[in-house]
Amino acid sequence: MKRSAFQLGDKYNKLREVFIDLFFDIELFSKDLRIYLGNVFGNWGKKVFFGKEVFVSVLYRKRGKYTRPLIHLGMSVLAGLSIIIAADTKVNEIIKLKKNTKGNLISMRFH
Image (cartoon, rainbow, N blue to C red; front, side, top):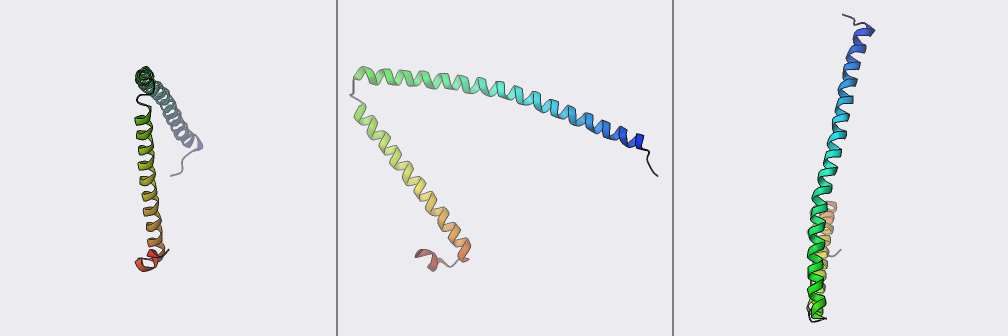
């Protein structure tokens, strides 16, 4: 049974309306999501900066008493993170070599 061009046009028009409604709903959802995330991260940022202000004011009042321990803590964290990142990089390199050598572990050890 052959359909007329008019019947096909109705189907395409309905499909077009469905897609227009879908894109309109996606647009509304993205606007609401932007507002929600703006509120969440805005409030989080206010709390973080308030906490930072309190922390800095305590350090400033002590006039350098906590400077050395704070620098040592920061350097320790930096060293720890660099060790973790280096180990992860080495593991990824070994995995790549293992895939390329098809399990020949002896040849991997000396690369």
